[in-house]
Length: 390
Picture 1 (cartoon, helix red, strand yellow):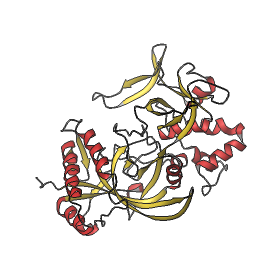
Picture 2 (spheres, helix red, strand yellow):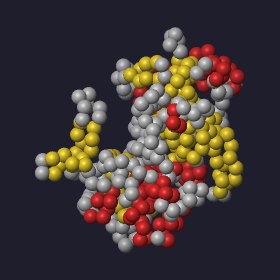
Picture 3 (cartoon, one colour):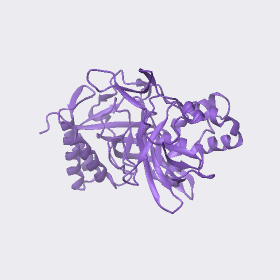
Picture 4 (cartoon, helix red, strand yellow):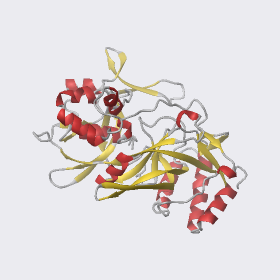
């Protein structure tokens, strides 16, 4: 959603892992190391998610190249894997039959994991969701914290011959300058007149910046979606990590609720905390109330993950193992194994390196509660058809 960013809702408020993909993020594994492929959602929503990945992939040049482990593959290879997997699912195979077919037809690549050298290749699996906040199209005494449109003075500069890398900034007396920070924008009201919508609480706005999209309930009872349009190009920094390092919270108690409570009790520190994150997001109206991922498709709850697109090919089919919270009456009552097929349909400023993925939980308070509790170890496997498959 990132944007939508996966701008991850909770744990990214706490920790930003400094990983990149200077080494191969995926490596092929042999059959004895394959996980047992099962699906804790009983395949619900999976076919729709696969179709959305295919819509995205079919719009790309077939020759688009990705590196997956020891293999160079194209968009066509990823498309063929998804098409073949959909045919397998259509047969409604037993669990054992599914595993036999995957073993026979697919190569399996395991993600490198945190730091790249963990023996179990564990990943940090977090969750994000689409929040719902109250808002107004006009500023009032109640609604006084804006989300902004892409500003007219924002400039995008291409910085390589291939036109793939870019920097975001502004022009000042003929010189290209970094764009304003979050603190600059909010403290000096630099974008006055370019407000898209107004919210009740500055932390509501901040959460939408982290999420990259959300729903806003207007006074007339209507609900409109807002989504990521552009960012200011400044680096993302975790306010949760900042608060822990400065003794405002302990790591154990750090959560979005705890951050809200702390800021409400210490309003004089609000700007100091929020402005620690220089990254700032600009928004536009969504054409749908559903959350839209960075591949331009509406995300299916439980079936889409955000991952670093420099490490993992967008749209690809992966198998994720971790743990999930079980929610009842707005409380986590237990934890269960999470084992399911998901698709890479999002990315985000806080999701960097081969050891991070962010699972989309959907919309609403229950999804938010589940997403907020997710900061679990996990493992990730990417599936491609064997190279000798026709």
